[in-house]
Image (cartoon, rainbow, N blue to C red; front, side, top):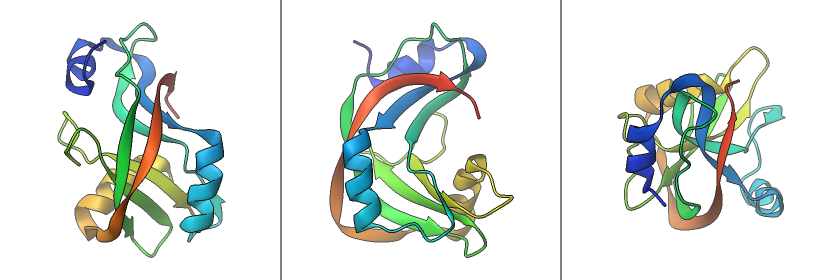
Length: 138
């Protein structure tokens, strides 16, 4: 099974996303621990690479750690993750879970919010099970 970095490199162009889905039962517990700050709770997945073929190789399922929280105060909240010892994705973005959104905001804004506003550490880091997945781009 390829590492996250190898899966990123092997992915071919398309309309899918490869990464990891949060375990549904664990998602509810995490939302109880970290209540959504905006009306629409997302807390669904972590992107490794977008715009890939449906046949792109998946990364291995893994355990990540929530190590930070970012919120622009205007409708985008994200949790920063550490996967395989790093918060930096192979494409230079930040591993994250879009946690919640306000009306009119989109999940794709999360990386910009993290880059522009930084993030506040979550102490201690919180382990989260991540199941390898291929899903449509939103």
